Length: 73
Image (cartoon, rainbow, N blue to C red; front, side):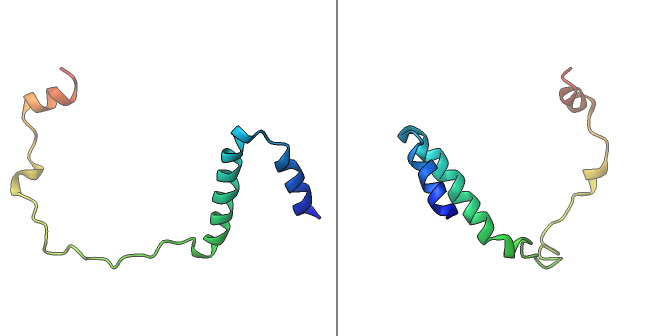
């Protein structure tokens, strides 16, 4: 049986490496369990409507000294 072969292989792994093998197996199993929930639940559009106001000067060009700072000058 395949599980017996896997257990035999596991017994041959040094103790200081077992934590890494456990992590691999654990996260693989969790991935299999969550495959049915592959798509995240989508949030409704417009939850923040009316809660944010963009100031009128947002679209104006930045001052030269600030542009220079972005360019590392």
